[in-house]
Image (tube, rainbow, N blue to C red; front, side):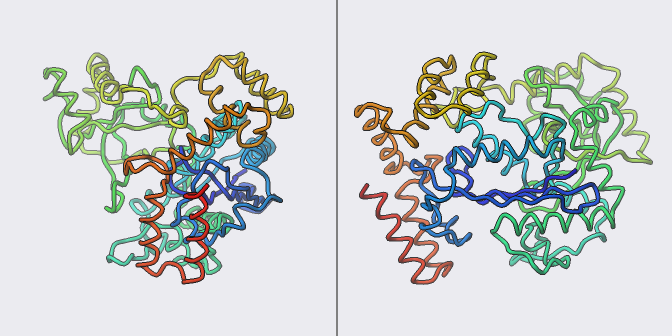
Length: 453
């Protein structure tokens, strides 16, 4: 079963924005629809939506404040129920690993769901169709038509790729429209490039990816960086980050010979994983990477790969260099950015399960029993958002002040939307003609309330 899905959101930051629409279509293995979901929710009171997000999606202030729709907390409960009910399934989106999956996790994290990784549990796994498209471009380019963007470059955006390949009903910037477009592209690749499709399905399981990489054979890794077209790198397994078993080193066998570097000091391997071009790339096996088997590899490449296989101490050194590059720095100061700081204790997980089932008056008592400070902070914010009468006047004023301070910040580096950033985006929208005068007037009136509240 495949669960194709998409979000529409208030902005581009999974940490500080929220989903406002979740659409999903469950299909069988032949892409025949089994069930479809299209749900929307209210805007949480502490989030300032990005004007560009509203202009592009056409979402109006009335839609965001529609009290007949579920709150973000209730919306998150609905999503969790759907994932559990549809399991086991492959959760498929377009650019979903970097974007939509993070919105899933942040929604679960900030609304105190006990399991942040539901799309990877109960037999579920994940597939990112954008990565499948990249692989198709490299390995079976004739399978699709490749549109050009305004700069004359090949475009891999779904709202351009799908129409160029015969999907004429695409309602871009609507979650359900993007889901249907993703299914259309998946069908084309499965039918026209079946070998690529089959190998991409293997890569959805990190255990299969691990097993393939750990053979030590030369492999093709397909990646895309920036605006350049996707390309392949010929390399082989070169060690594992001891602090993160999902992070594997992939030595570029075309760029260098590992034997020539083997006697170098630690600085050689630090440069190998950090410099440009990288001699050692990082493969996150749990994020649907794109390694492929290859035939007819040059003997020189085979010899270089075998050298790495036969030198476990060298692979250990490379793993250490990976760990050094990705070593945790100072812990982020904002609770939204600490989702990956630590796992919950068994006791806290049990309390989170209770938290989801009781009413708000009982939830306040559960918050006091959490061991994890993050759960205290997020829980108190939920009480403030949805049952503020349970807090003291002082606590409510403190929460209101903290929200206002965020909105009014003049620091351009803040990772959330602020009033100054709103003003900047509104000017861009007006200058680029991205919204008509009536729509601009509605948005201006809407944002004034945040300044005056």
